[in-house]
Amino acid sequence: MSESTDNTNASYRLKPAMSLICWKYSSGGPEPIILAEAFNVYNFSFWQRHGVKQAMRMFSRQAVKKSKVNCKEILKLKNYNDYSLYYTRRENGIAVSAILPEDYKLRVAFGFLNMVINDFHKTFAEKVWKPTTKDWELKYPKLGDFLKKADEPSQWDSLAKAQSKIDSIKEVMFRNMDHVLERGEKLGDLVKRSQDLSASSKFFYKDSKKLNRCCVLQ
Image 1: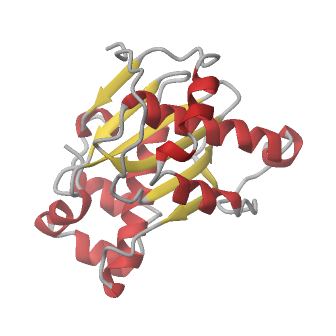
Image 2: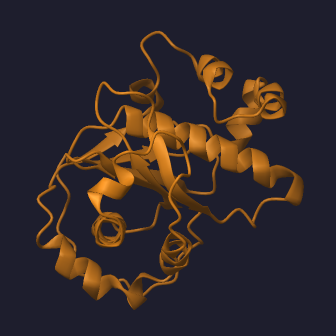
């Protein structure tokens, strides 16, 4: 499905973005590696926040693992206050995912991800991020600033527009949960094998109704 042209100015205020993660992943390789991440889970109760961040990592990691190179992809989040997971991966193995409100215009959402990727490449030489083998080996505090910027596109949208002109990625794919899961796998199976969930989170989310209320993807 191709992205529609949108020339309107993003001068609206949105619900807060909830996650922004930079990944290292090449098709057929090991599990995607988190290079850096930032979250905003303050709309959840204190006791929910840790588990919610773990669930975001789990779904985002699985989506990146299933992603196509040079493609814009979206997973709709069910019962998550009208949020979706937006993600894209480049040929060199760098990917970015973000959980953003659904009323984000497609051009603005992927312009934002493109802006983050460009800044990442300016900040880190390939010889710095390429050798990473474990999550969170890089320090990238600017990612938290980008997550805050996501809430007010009017502050940076002109930059996103300029960068999107040289973005060769034209196709947008809308994904569902079946695409993200392994063949024949159920959501509960993903929870069991995930390394992103603690034992207590796995115990909580083994009840599929609780997982649905948190952040199940349609």
